[in-house]
Image (cartoon, rainbow, N blue to C red; front, side, top):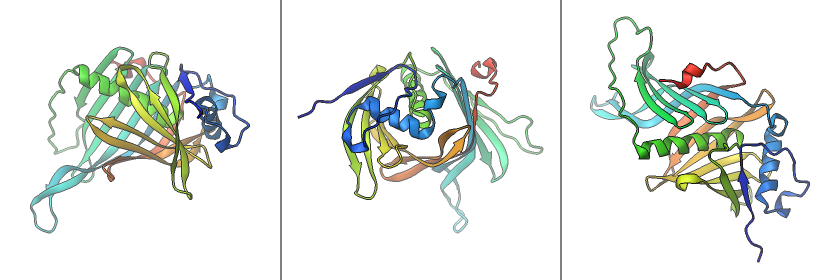
Amino acid sequence: MRGKRTLTLFGTIIAAASANAWGATQDPTELLARARQALGLDSHAKGIVTLVSTGEFTKVGDSRAPSPKTGEMAPADSIGKIRLTFRLPDAFRQDYAYTVLGKLPGPIFITCRDGDTIWLDNRLPQPMPTGTSISVDPPPEPDAGRRRSILFLHARYLLALILYTTPSFPIAFTYAGSTGTSDSRGVALDGRGPQGFEARLVLDQKTFRPLMLSYAESGITRELRLDGYENSSGILFPHQVTLMQGGNVKEVLRLKKFELNSQVPSQDFHK
């Protein structure tokens, strides 16, 4: 019986592609190289410095609002705009700008990492819409558990969007077999990293594109479903990211724009 092959990534994008057919290899090095080639990442091996993605989010049942039928408070979706900013290798910022009352800009919740510095912030839109009054409480200082979850969040985004891991957070992959049905099959790679990081990356058998990244958080299994691939600056990016939990949709990100190597001020990663 053939043993598992292991690959540790150290922040470089491997340009070599396997000449073998999909089913002929269980080597994670070759499988990841094929996936990067399919996405167009092999030609950007050393050229990605910053990546900025903007779009919209829907968090299903995340808030409460009066039911149009009964007037009673009931679960409602939260909506708004999202911005993901990456400066490789170790800087990351996530901005959730909520929309309130259907159309007005609401509070902005920021999660940021810059190397070993990790911070949270809650802000109000500027300028505030005329005639509106919104307040937000300052977030607590992130404890060890929250810092760890932000570090993991950063690592998952980099894997899902550009199949990248950082030198400070290397992830080792092993072949984990085939998944899916005869009509839609994939290959699974299990990744393990520092501080107990674990995730399963599933690549499509036909296109080599990442289909899903699954992981456990607080004892709950979650899946990031990746879809809607479109070309931006020569790279295929997933323009829809769906967070699933227990078979139900929890959140949908519709990433409308990806910008490579745009100017990102260092102050963006400072509180």
